[in-house]
Image 1 (spheres, one colour):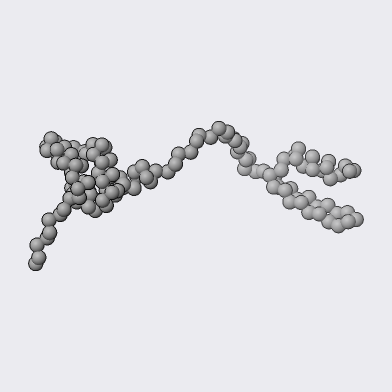
Image 2 (cartoon, rainbow, N blue to C red):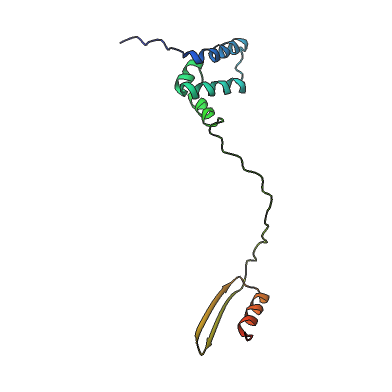
Length: 132
């Protein structure tokens, strides 16, 4: 079986690699990696690829990939807060449904009206029956 070639760390990633090494040497206990280092690792992964960065920096591939995807290039633009908010009252459960049939010398008309109230119906009848 052929021996594996040693992994070459890209020149642009060596500085962040040294930062990770210094941080790991200074922390014997298993502590979470600081956000500053994660951000630098995500930036290196954007430039050199997630696989290469995770291997060079000894980081979990999946978490680094999520950090890259959630980075500044993938953030959604923020929307301005709403200046006007319309509040619509809740509809009553048993709103009336009206069926109005009109017949005259010029033909028939059928109006099916859902959610109408008595004042709405009174106004409609006034408009239809009053002479123009």
